[in-house]
Length: 316
Image (cartoon, rainbow, N blue to C red; front, top):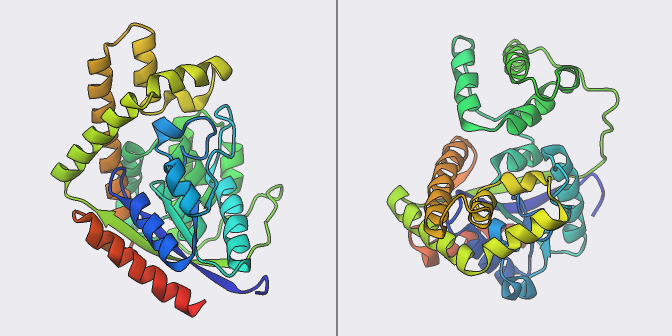
């Protein structure tokens, strides 16, 4: 396969606990594919319980990539993910196999697909409302990465911790896009030569009530599997790790620090996870080219994803 070829890959995404990992595994196993992680927390080493890595059995059945590749003390980024994912996908394609991406980080998936800023329409009279909505949905780090994708020079110019100026720069960059004005690329940002990646994106959809039940079960299983010990181990090795502020780890450490009971921590973690899942659902529902898979029935959802994988594999 030449470096200029377009590589087709399957992407299974959706909110946490929607069943995307099981569906992706079934599809990859059926067509002889390989899994590529597209979750911003699962890239950290030493955090398999709290970030929901696939089981050891699943990893033994199908090759998995981009799990545990960086220290929890490192701040990973969408730009780095694109580079790492392109390399992994190209290597999988060179082996004659299908790459099956799976994850819940919409920013990473859109950056890889090339649909940033977001592949969503926005009229100029609604621009500020749109930005305010995005500010409510996403962290400051996500806004910074979005700005970097839109206007790399502005992202270098605005101080990393300046939220107000970051938001104003986002508005300016989006206004330029609406007027058809291209923002200049940062001269210091090297372009990584890579084949074009064409993602077939499938979004797993589960009714909110059912999803809350799945999340509650998942959180309970994480704590039962040793999340508290994992969180303390990470803190002992990397006390200032940004990953420790993530959902699950903050609650587990609160137990260790005596600021919450185990029951309180589990309830808080379940609530925060449900809130996060709602934000994920909002993001993925606005992907115009994605296909929605009704995933209330796990078996039917896996069959639909596997059928798509067979179709792609037959063409490559």
